[in-house]
Amino acid sequence: MIKQKIMVCVTEQKTCERLIKKGIELTKDNDTEIFVLHVATKDIKVIEDPRAAEELEYIFEESKKYGASVTVLKSNDILKTLSKFAIENDIDYMILGETRLQNEKDSVIFNLRKELGATKTQIEVVPLKSN
Image (cartoon, rainbow, N blue to C red; front, side, top):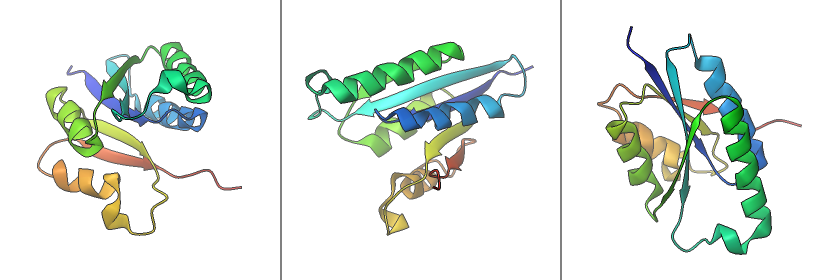
């Protein structure tokens, strides 16, 4: 059986735990590999922001609980970095959090769907928590 590959895209926020849990929900059997990916823009220095560093560390710890590999890539082009990682790693499902942008066409999600349209990667969007 071919191993299923799931990519969970996170920021340095603890609320991204819901994305990791969604990735776990999609696992159908033990032949699933989960990649948790964070793209840090080159101008952001997580080490200089203790809160961001703490939250990113929390995401790493949560990922490890589920046996997911964690990757941090540094780039100012988040769209290209995510799509390149998905293609190079033959990703089946990409998990992203819902955008807060008013204009969907400005969102990474909309542009990733265009970018990955000809690939097998399916994009799963996890809604923001409602209060």
